[in-house]
Amino acid sequence: MSAKRRHLEVVFFVLVFGVSLYLVWLIARPFLNLIMLSVVFSVAVYPIYTRMLKLFRGHTQVATWLTLILVLVVIGIPLYFFSLAVVAEMRGFHDGLLRLLHQQNNLLDEAARMLNDVNGKVHFTNDTITATTLTDQIQGMLKPAGSIFAGHLLSIGTKTVNIITQGVLFVILVAAILPSVTTIKKLMFRLSPYDDRIDQKYTDRVLAMTRAMLRGTVVIALVQGVYSGIVLWLFGVPYVLLLTVAMVLLSLIPVVGTVFVNLPIGLLMILTGNVFGGIVVILNQMIVVSNIDNVLRPMLVPKEADLHPALLLLAIFGGLKVFGPFAFIYGPVIMIIFTTTLELYLDEFKTEFS
Image (tube, rainbow, N blue to C red; front, side, top):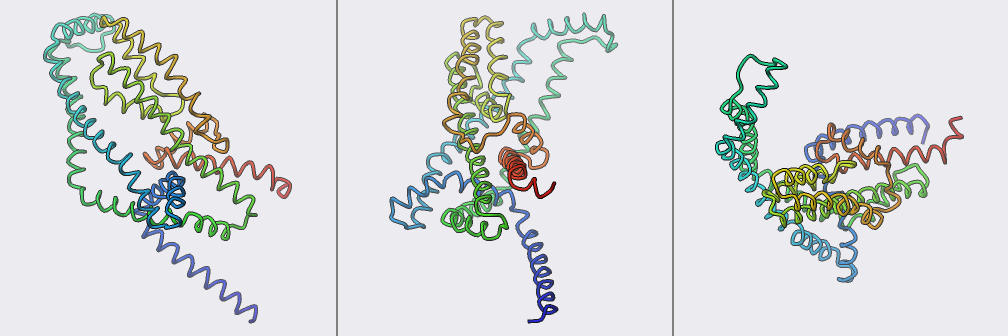
């Protein structure tokens, strides 16, 4: 084969590969988040799949579907009913706050008097503030929240077909990925120009970070949020499901956590007369909840997933602007790839660039 013909074949291959890759990208782009979520989910449940595979003597299809059914029963169904309860509590909180505004006239009158005193010194408005104007202002802020809430419920109702379609596609993708994890890993090693040792380092770090965010960060956030919610429930704090969800979400964010809920509630309990309950909630946050992370993280998060809290915070908050809610997975994984690449540069390639 002449060099000219070989060159033509290479050019044609690059052209065909580029065009086909672009077309595949166009096809996959609407489902990119779903595909990534399927990959992450498969990585998370892969240890369960391997145990099922041993239990059923290598029957991949049986092991795959039993893994999916087990996860659905243990996580999916309880999460569905919990979500319904949270939605009902959100509606009750919204309605209860509106009723409270109409009932607490004395409190609003006192707030209006204080604001008028401040206004007399600062002069930020020429109007006199009354309990009625305060009520109207608060209701005006609550109505958009209620409209957004109702809009989301309506949106969920109108997109039921789309949700079901994506759910079915998710299950099919996971069922295809789970038995093929080893094959996919070997293919990636073959495609990579790196030495297998370097490929393995990348793979170990990415898998460790993915599992750390799911098995470590998410589990720790659930333990902190649910435990704090139980303590609040024992002391009669209302809307405890809503507060529990808020604490779980806050616990996912480094350096934030449940203190942003427990501390204000504890202080409010003290100010409203429940001194003992408020002190217990605050001490529980300081002594117990804040140390759950220190106890569980070494057991759940492997060394390979160690990332400085500042970088993790940057990865999550920066990722939220780019990837939305999926930033809790994408951001840390991208950051661990970046830090691994820096380490490889220092260990393997620095001399070649100097």
